[in-house]
Amino acid sequence: WSTRTGGLTDPNFPFGFVQLSTDDRSGTTVGGFPWIRWHQTFDVGYVPNSVVPNVFMAAAMDLRDDDGGIHPRTKEDVGYRLSRAGLAVWYKQNVEFLGPIVSSVVVASGSASIDITYSNVTAIELRNTAGFEVKTNILLF
Image (cartoon, rainbow, N blue to C red; front, side):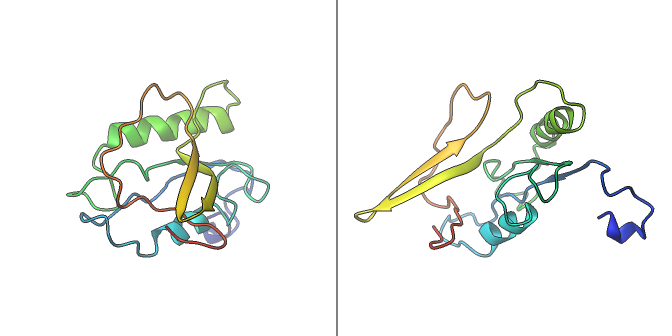
């Protein structure tokens, strides 16, 4: 983004973005979204990171919206997450803002265990066991 402004934007200027959400109603189509989400973070899996230290993200993979597609209509959730990330990354405020981010995946004997980092969560509701997307170096779930 800083190079696309013709050098008018300082490379250290903070930049926030919203992660792509899910798209398929059936939960059976994986598509390219795990790869796109991975590349959104400059192939690290999260931001900020050493490649883009002043970049922050509103995670949205858990904000499935069948009628809204990859752009969740719950803008309040997205705005809240993006604002918290900006406060933490750029303004160095001590606020929780991370997640959901897959922190590890273990596959053994035909089953998988997925650990997710999600700060400031009191409860998680599992609405469907199909359609969860995880990209690893080896496997795509």
